[in-house]
Length: 189
Image 1: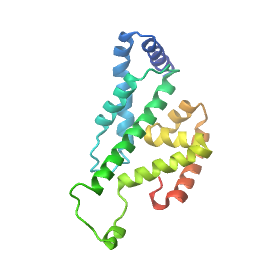
Image 2: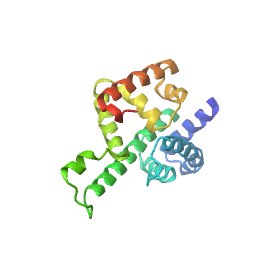
Image 3: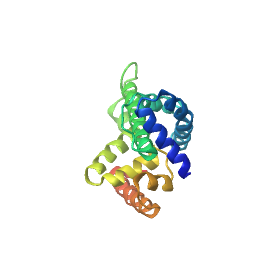
Image 4: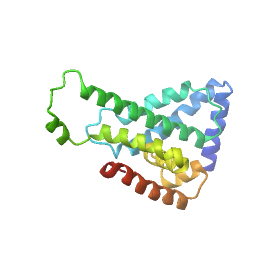
């Protein structure tokens, strides 16, 4: 694994230095990893989700390929990829929620509307807002949640990405879950 990480880091540096061949060699490696992360992420999504893992990866990878970032290493790349995937999912949920509120929707009375339960899009948006709040007072906990849930990283991968122990990841997630549960009620993770 160490050699694999060094290869990705080397290719990221070569690509940033202008070597287009490095991007061609890097693409299949990171694309496969992003696809694996997206599939893991979508295991927690509702079955009728209109955005599929491949579409999420395509959009994230296109954005990453256009970025002019001095990549530090593989961990830096995947941390930014996790943040991008979160933004894409949130933007998708925002658009779907906006579409539900207008454009040919049937009118409902206040009683009907208050009886409706928040759907997955609304839950994702509430979680995103809560993570922004959490980042304001504990950025590491917010990063752990983002990498683990939105980036699809395992405890070990999250620990490696943040240069902390897996025990710390476990504790940070446990504390973050409790805070989110209190902050979001039943919409927590």
